[in-house]
Amino acid sequence: MPESHSSALDLVLPILRCPVCEEDLSRADAGLRCLNGHSFDIARQGYASLIAGVRPTSGDAAPMVEARRRVLGTGIYAPILAEVVRLATDQVPPPSIVLDAGCGTGNYLAAVIDALPTTRGLGLDSSTYALRAAARAHPRAAVIACDLFGPIPVSSASVDLVLDVFAPRNAAEFHRVLRPDGMLVVTRPTDRHLGQLRHHIKGMVGIDPAKEERLERTLDPHFDALHTVPTEYTARLSPDEAADLVLMTPSARHVTSDDLEGDAAGALPTEVDISVLTTAYRPR
Ligand SMILES: [Zn+2]
Image: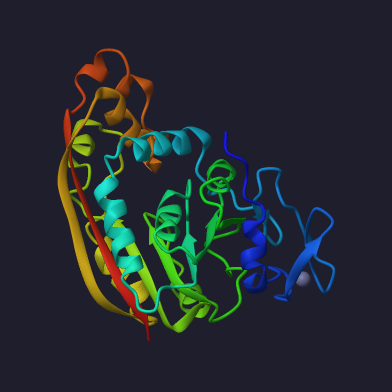
């Protein structure tokens, strides 16, 4: 197992701030501390917890994170990853700090900063299981546990690029942390995404057709859309891969082993439509 990259924290420490009082943070003992004495742990795996008050419980569970890691390892989502990297690295000048909101296992963030040799990465998530994986994703990627729906513990106008890939949006905070000439890249599924699986498995949650409208309403006060790129293809699946595609989504909570194992495994769709949109935005 590769070692954690706790030193990546030092690369982004100047832009981190205390989630309680918004003061600067520095290393103290084995954790981080602000000028007012609020202190925060750094986990053995290398990620810091910048959470004020009660820890959010919305984070993804261990089996979901494991399924996601297996799927990302198969290459089924490789064209999506390539599109995110292309949009993120297309900027002139290249971003010096990339923040991935809802970074999951860190594989999108790692791919983006790997393509940009001097860029520092900062991944945010609320799932302990995801954070443990993300902390090992890349030597230049620091990882922070925080509440993605609350204030982001990062200084204003300090980030060049915010990535949001299949993750919750916090438009006002994305706008605040971005530099005025920064960029936001959002990747989300269309209602055709994984259609065969959604059709086959009753417990699987559908994609709300009003989702795009809601996204626009949420982002419009803060961002101008520059361009949107669709990524559409059909992927062939083994029964294990089909099961993992279900288990990696929030639908996993509504699906039982009867849907995916034994005889049910043989009846799973052998191909599935992948359909996502990636949009680049400029702050207003
Ligand atoms: Zn403080």
